Length: 137
Image (cartoon, rainbow, N blue to C red):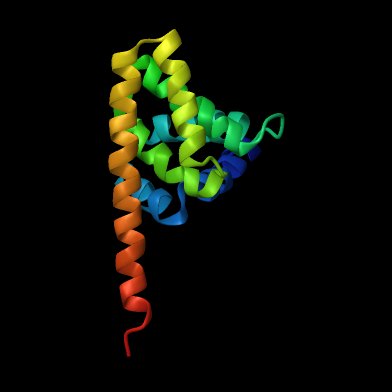
C-alpha cells in the first residue's frame, strides 16, 4: 500500500517532468531500483516539489543551480526540459547559473550553460518538427 506522499509525488512528477518521461521511467524500473524510485517519488516529489511554499518556477531554478553547483550534470537536461512546465524561462536559468559561477565555480556554471543551450536547441527542433506534421493531410 502506497502512502499519500507517493501518490502526490507521482502526480507532481508527471506535471513537472511530463507524462511521457514518467511513463518511460516507470517502465524502466526494476526490482533493484524500485525502492529508490519509491523514495524519490515520496520525498523529492511528494514532499519537496509538492510543497506550495515556493513556486515551481523558483523550485526549478533552485534545482538547476544545485545540480550545477554539485556537478550533477546528468540531471540538468531533464530539468531544463521541465522548465517548459514550471515557468522558469531561459533567462531565469541563466541567472541561476550566474549564481553558480560566483558561489560554486565558473567551470560548473559554464558546463551547465552548455547543457542548457544544447537542451533548449533540442527542444526547439522537436517543436519545429512537431509543427511540420501539424499541417500534414
